Image (tube, rainbow, N blue to C red; front, side, top):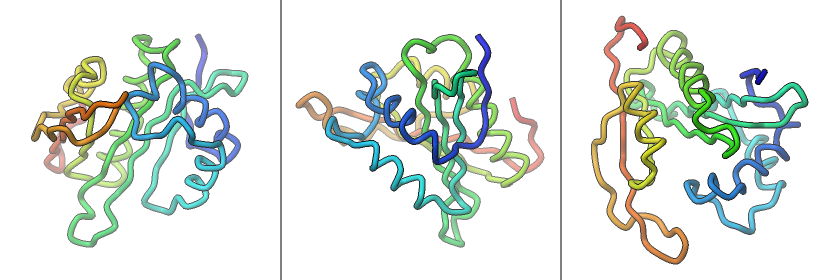
Length: 170
């Protein structure tokens, strides 16, 4: 399978929306079933210089994954970024998540000099938790009953990776 990881473009919005709403992906986002493509387009148009979004795309342009890193804009938290990631169900367990994670963390470590990258993940999403732990993320807190999914309150973990300046990316 040939795919490319590149910065997201406005034309990726429809494919990104399909990815976000896909069964097997959607349940692990904070999106709603009624989300429209325009929601993704509007979100892309609001991105600023502290928003770094990458997509994994097939040769035909199909979006099969996405990873985003938002740097905190508060001057006292400029060393912190928040990570989000999605991978198409047909391409999970094929290295797409690992490649996206490497891309985002290389940016965080070597260009943005972030010391802390944090994320939230559903507590039952073992596949994602395993990926994050592989890259040095640690569970910091259990956020009990913090989100609704399928008519029930669900738990999430707050996870973070702390990197002291000069440490090598793993």
